[in-house]
Amino acid sequence: MRPDILNTGYRPGTKALFALIRLFSRQPIPDAAKLVFYRPDFYGDRAKKFTHEAMRGPSPWSVADRELMAAYVSKVNNTAFCIGAHTATAAQAYQDEKKVQAVLTDLTSAPIEDGLRATLHLLGKLTREGTTTADDMRKVLATGVTRAHIEDALAVCAAFNITDRLADAFSFELLTPSGYASGAKFLLKRGYQ
Image 1 (spheres, rainbow, N blue to C red):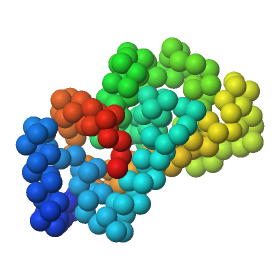
Image 2 (image 1 turned 180 degrees about the vertical axis):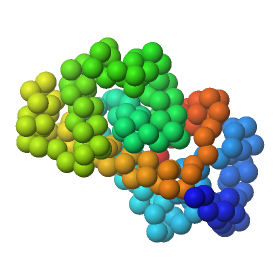
Image 3 (image 1 turned 120 degrees about the vertical axis):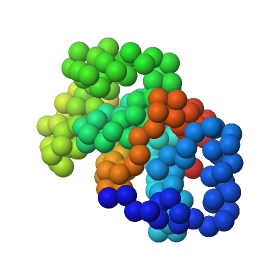
């Protein structure tokens, strides 16, 4: 259920910021942004910091790889808003929309490196089942992925399992393709801060 407070519950400075963003982007403010601005002291500031670190902090994974992970976790969760947002962002980051669509259509045959494929399988299992095993980890490590890779991928998985659930709980409104493209451009330029 979408609470009306997401449309109206903001301080005057935040309302002015939203108006400027709408003016310059010619796009509506995504509900993900509205949510983090609604109660920044309770959720928004912490969520932005954690998500930005997972998605843009130092990592052996590229920004494109992490955006693909976000899209894949969102696909496993069947969260339409986040699938759209992070598919668009991964496609822009890779400059390869076909690659991203191939992963989301059939991970097993997608044209990606074995380490990334194994990691996405791990994130999918963790998202679906809520658990992994030592054998699951060994399979990923056997592809050449390091412990640091796994830790960073798990941070992305955690961030988007939370975000996906909030998007579904608050019925985030879907954007148009140009809205997702505009959001992707912003995320690639500014990150999640």
